[in-house]
Image (cartoon, rainbow, N blue to C red):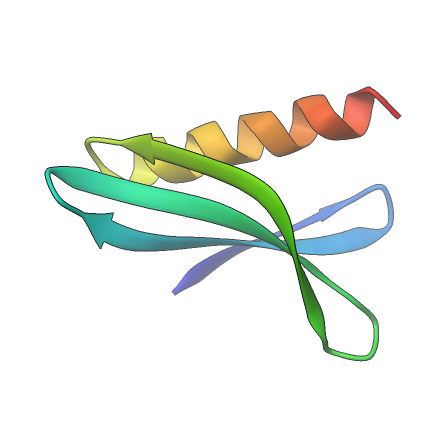
Amino acid sequence: MARELELKGRRYWILSEPLTGGWKARVVGVREDGSSEELGIDATADTRGAADDAAERKLRRLLQAY
């Protein structure tokens, strides 16, 4: 399951997977044609929700810089 966000007219998915002792989340940009692009934004935490939240915060900070 992925968390889907729409920010500044673009769609993003936050994908999570178990990691030894916690969770790792990464952000993928989704294009209009359905293809996707890795953005290089990763976050780790003890729980899935915390990892997803951390990845989302990093994405929002990156988008504010532009």
